Image 1 (tube, one colour):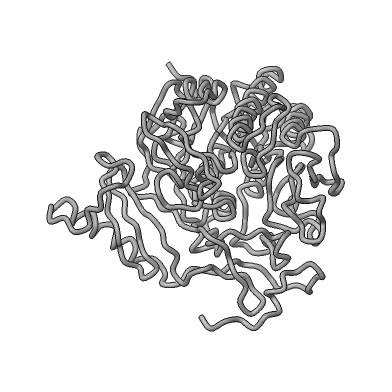
Image 2: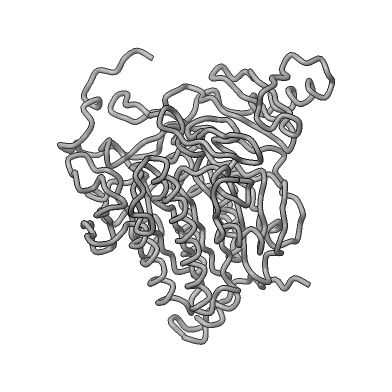
Length: 479
């Protein structure tokens, strides 16, 4: 019989009391959220990958819950801002990829209520919060305490490539990392080890408190490098494989640390990825369930947006469960808040729905009738502001069986039966079958309910800097 953690909010009578801290620690589960950069299901063996082994990730699935129908967004900025805020890109404005340190225009503004992060909400619930890995949606030269203002007590983040600062390009070899003490180059160590060790050090210091840990990995994004475990990896593919193995190693290292610290059984581990594997002319292919799958980062195909999603916590999350419950990254904020014993503020607008009841085994299915993915391509600058690349971005919407592709004219252009056609080869849009017409009508009603124009990012203008993109000063072209 599964023993569930009691997730209740403990009222502390004396601030800083060790007894109160112990009580809070016992009643609230820790959360460790791991998100790999640019890795599709076809590279994870528990999802059917046939030419690579990922034993530590597989162990999480075997001992926990594996989701088959979890959507990320097709590119990194859209996924990150969505999971942080619980809002779809069409609402929060991050409908395209946007490297803030490189562009030098705007930022992920903590002063805007719409940009409230799960970290701030978890901190308000008494959680110690830490992030490590890749942030890239603030310029730490301008906002050196951006992470703290977004709700993190501690952090070790690759800054993203800062225009005018060549050292900041590096996230693996001689990584350029920002911590509460500032940004610097770390020599003689591999970036992923710095990020992972920072999290472990934080866990060691705060093991008596409830913790919310966010690990958006720098792996396996380009540049593809040889790892300390495979220093002789030469070709691009060999290095990619080596980096996937290092992802698995870092997962194992974190799980071992949780065990060593005696907090494994009260730590809910969530593993996912931000989008599919690198595609295009430099893309990678892998065999999954007997089919060769090409990398589809930036694409709206299932290989681009249907992410691996695994949840594990001994005695709290049932072992060996495989679920077709629908979920997407908008659900993460309300899910984490509920797992922590709290509620999303009534005046905070979000698009997601908590799946905590599914994770805890109280319900076998989520409340989601459909999930959505959008947000790809590069952003652009118009009148000095970053805006989306399209008025209404192309997107996909699906349920457990059917999926539609939606054009920038808000029209459905493709319908696929994913149970019969998981690789989306046959367009059923012109089918005369009643069930196909009903599915199209169902999804068109969802499309019609959406705004005709996607939002632009919420941020306040600031003074120009020498490194700002030149496009900012150019006269915008007619839309």
